[in-house]
Image (cartoon, rainbow, N blue to C red; front, top):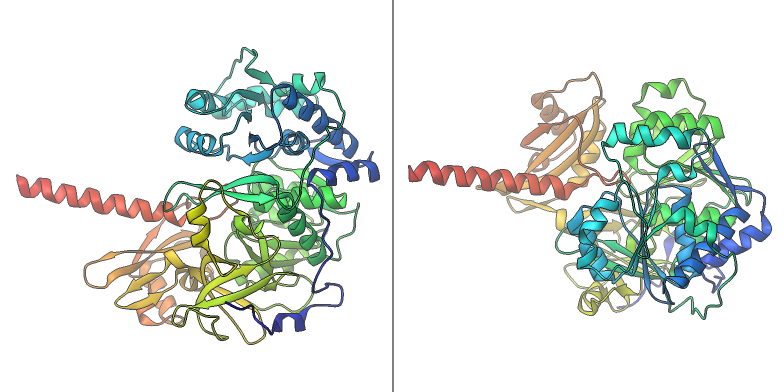
Length: 573
């Protein structure tokens, strides 16, 4: 299949953004070394008042690297990191890379089953985790190839006296107290750093071939898969991000780090970008609207990559009118559709720019975005980044679709993954003639702007009609009383499937089903209007704030199964 010969999106590229970049063939960790040389005494991390300079983080990462080598870690071995956003998360990430290891980012919310699968599948030898999650890791350790566990706590990098007070707060909030007896297999993160040597390790790494990261994704239709991302994949995407945000100044910006570093979106657009450009990161271990608003005002944050639910949370918090958010210059929203109302409100309050982008773990992650300071289109995910080709695969012809025709989004570019870890067949099935098939349905307009209509697997087929949940959600978000909305298809004996909407009203607001039906009827064809509504106080989400549609689908399936079983039992009586 051929690449598009005409790339209409280039007509909208400003002079500051080149169509193609000269990429560094370098390792990710070289960014930290270079930053430590250029900005040795500049603060790179601010964690609840605890500041660390580039030189301090660099030396700490080298110390950890040498300790990992002493524990038997060699080039290509996997080191898992199961940490919330903390200084340790940054040190562990670059420390593992300096040791020649492949990083396996692990969500701290994972339960034993998920931890066991990821450790077994990746073959990780070392786990660096929070004390709070250690009991879960310990339960599955013997079923995995883990040889060493390195433990740290939030308090370890807090300033005095917060470091003394925090353990009591942690116990009160979680009810968990972890008392550890360190040995030759269980280690203290802080002690390892203290005893480590801050010396460089000679490594023979090929950035284009050697992996920097195994980032797990999926799990909705089967076991989570390890996405193989090379140093070059991640270096390229970081450079592309720098190019797109061309008004951001090296060594000057203050970026709010609320997106989790264990998610590839936060890893690239916050951590890797900051280290490359000498930014200061204000590290937030979890998303709390009140704390975020306070941090933006206090630290005069200029950049804040996030997810729509994060911006919605801020806009609906009563403190937003009390805080000065005028320092914000630019925000790129990802992981879910950005409602127009949210974009407009956030820009009015901050005076900065908020635009929607698009990417996947398999693309390191960003491939497409609206321009931050130039022309953008409402409802569009934007245009491809430099050196990135995007096309629509026509379901009818099996070739590149015409403008306006809905099909599957395909991507080519230097940021596209090497493949899935130990899954050659799945890797092969995900590529078509060199194009990565995203599984997202969308279209391109005449100007080269792309639009997502929905995930291929989320499409609802009701009465023979194809219905895309995202379209309905966009309409629901226009309702002034709705804070969050999610739409799924549920089984229907007559239509095959019918549309169900889950609604979270804004605080203090009430909405009736009749009111929503009348509202939707004004904006949607009759067959797209939800037939069922469920009102909730909150919706299930990932740590990035992405609404977990699959959890709602699973809940509905469980309800149907339980109802069927109950009916059978009653008939048996």
